Length: 332
Image 1 (cartoon, helix red, strand yellow):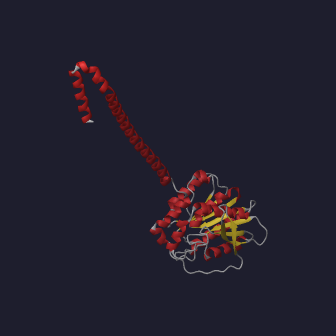
Image 2 (cartoon, helix red, strand yellow):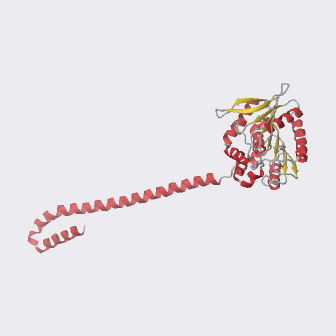
């Protein structure tokens, strides 16, 4: 560009000094000069366009990054559901260690049997069913604890089945057939539960029971929280919910949709579903206009499981008596 300017200056001086030949030089210079000026103008515009393109591209990248960050922040920072909060405890070493490995326990039922039923996600679920002796619309859904649908759950369900008389009891399996015998494996199973799949298993059980079924729910620990969720899902078919030291629903608006009373058996020594959590649940149920029958024991988490080394026989006996009384009144 510098050489071009020198060349033009030289030509212009030549034209100035030889006035008699102005017309001749103007003829020679005008077209190349216009061409060069046009070229310079084109380069200038091209450079400006290129600069604008860079700014636009950079702006677009910044905008997309901000949008993506905002969306990820919403996902990351949105409050997890009650069941997700409980599942997250599986990452807590203290919580895992608090679950002593269960003593070996074997039970073979002469009444119950395994069943399969369809779930709305296009799959099937397995369950353990204790069918009522006579035709009935009364059902009790039992949801296992941390370890999965093991023999302890089946035995406990059969005891309840006999004490309630004519009720069909179905043990739901939210682990899809997997059972743990050591606490680390149980933690992995609990963490691996997908909420959509668990809800599909419950929805399939509700459909299996039928549209005229009166459904009560019961669960311990992991299953305690899901017992309440199952009653919420059962809608107007729900007649009663029993929770043993499970994570309560914390959304008052969801609790307002509940169509049944709740019996809660909780442990005052529980570090996670502790008295503060239980007190909030009590307050939330009142705010929702729902009835909570609350029983709290000087015991630890999982006090009702006799295969648990920290089993509390006195607390378990009292909680069970309240449970049977509560269910009998609602599954007539």
